[in-house]
Length: 109
Length: 207
Image (cartoon, rainbow over all chains, first blue to last red; front, side, top):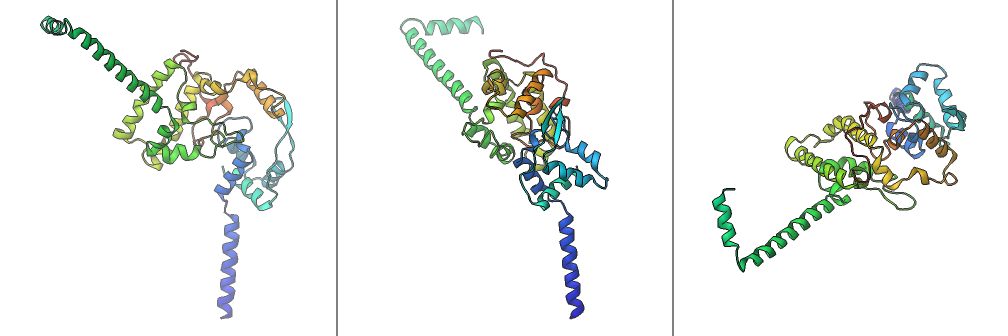
């Protein structure tokens, strides 16, 4: 009985951690759309900002890649677009999990 | 037509009958032109484009609904027709002829009649539209949006900077404003990566 209970708890935790690790593509894309990210960033085509594919190439596999991107989309750093400096817009959501989901989706491109 | 037939018809239509023939000719022309005009107008409505075939109703229209051209603060809408059917007369007639291809695809080849086929053809369809729009310098966009009358005081600084960049680099509207209504295809070049020959595409208000 005790064994069954602990096994169930272990499975539950495993499932929870796995589901936490999977990227919710729909939620990420909804966030990108509602925050206006797609006005400047395309997934793989040339627009105003780097495409998500380019970004993923630059930051994938890097230890602090995710952290750097999270900072980029939440702290409105100055970016240079064609010689003109302007503030990069931040995600409206303050939920860390949602931000992480978006960043992980970008890194998966 | 052989001379015999022509002279026979002329004899038949002579005299008082000539008036009847003339009136019938007018009536026929009136009916014909009305049918033509009505068809041109009806096939240029949102109801026709968005709902008469399932390829559009289940794919393109679903993406359009909720987009900024559909729902926005002021309720001013740009429907299928406004972007995809030229307003200038000659390009309009050319486009309407081209639209006969839609009938062919829908009834005969069934090229995009399932979601999977539609998605597979999406890059090609998008590139076709982008090529057309680049070639005519986004003529359909300019039907509503006049860059020279964009008030910089009413635009955000980012927008002002972008449009100045666009002017400098001789970009056309669709080079940056793509994927705004319909989903971007997941592969293939974007408008800025397409090399477009502008020679054959009608550009202006008449031609």
